[in-house]
Amino acid sequence: MQGHNLIDAIGGLDEIEFKQLATFNRGSVGVYWAQTGLSPWERHPEDDELLYVIEGRVTVEILTEADRIEVPIAEGSVFVVPRNHWHRHKLDGVVKEMYVTPGPSDTSFAEDPRIETDT
Image 1: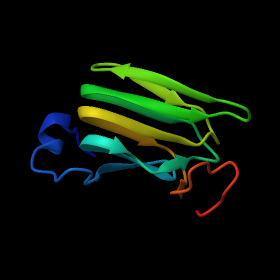
Image 2: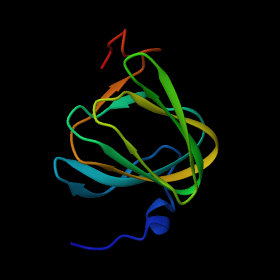
Image 3: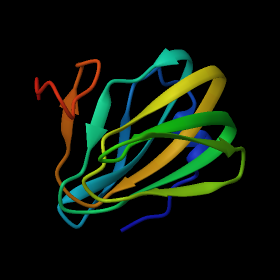
Image 4: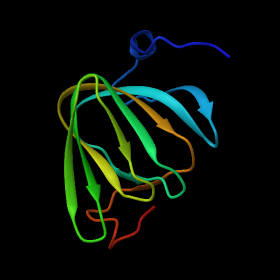
């Protein structure tokens, strides 16, 4: 058991290098940073996921059954990704982020993982 300074934890990481800080239920709590581009799609079939933007900003794109929703998240803000929804990060500048993922995750590099499955 220990506390973690999020800024210190990110220091020294390479871009898109994820650092797990602790286990959380069946998943993990961790940090990472990135600058530009799109992350792969991911979903968490059993749990919601909590995102906290430590520094910068990010747009999270979420796929519903019939739509694509883009949610801008500013520095200092938190966002809960609903369970079993495909989502990805759209980056336009540096973002440093903490994630709390309490359970298993699926990943997809498909254009639309609702239609194509390559997990």
